[in-house]
Image (cartoon, rainbow, N blue to C red; front, side):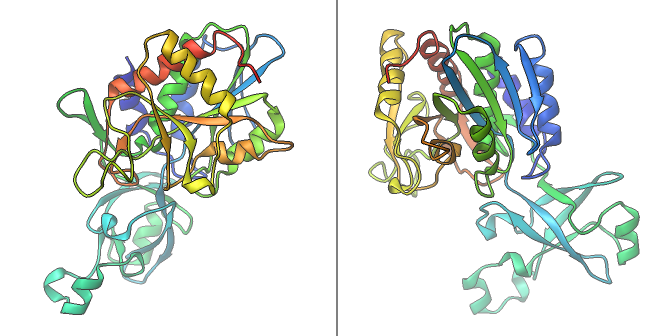
Length: 345
């Protein structure tokens, strides 16, 4: 089931540059379903299903936004930096897991108590520079004895759970949802094409793994599987994000107001035709927000026709992201249907 796969992936931990536990889940799930699987020098996991000379790259980034140890003071409090795009107030008072050499260490993100803030401090909100992690240690040596050092990665301590109406919540749906879509596609698809399923690293800090892997593979077309923002809840309007959860996966036409990806219309048409022929409900998007691995891929070498397929996901870049599992399943159905034949380019 897609839901149980997403549970495993969301509960795994892998900040940019430290994607190892996610890597392990993926390799186990793909065993016996692909012809080749290997890790490249950047750390991308590349799975291949062999077919004819036409090469399709499907890319899903493994990494999640997280933190990293920057400094440990004399009293054992840990200062940290953000890896990826955090909204600072989301982090204040979260419980975290520090992935130390000796095993996981739990801590809490603290800061100045609200009762002790003046009016100006309350209005400003707590910034990352004002926060620290408390693991219960009383000095720097105790922290070192726990296996924590400068550069140790940190993730949020939050687990997957189910909500009503096929909705689920958890951390790192950006982009474990895309990873789940890609795994299920590789497990299911029967295609005449050669398919490269690439689980990329370091997307959240600059689309790095996608850039290097696309350069090596030189695919004929590429599709990134990621998440996108719906406009179906308070605080955002449909005119700003005109897609909804539960209404199907989203095919990107433009993201980041064109500063990121302007999708290849032929690839978009190929996907929409497959959706129509197989009664799969899809949505399309011209977005103003973020971008995906497809941006780096489509600018590689002489240019690679690309787009993105995404389940709408609420509250992204937080520990409580929410999506409708049916959108993920429909995304798999769309990829499997489209890959039955080569697009016309």
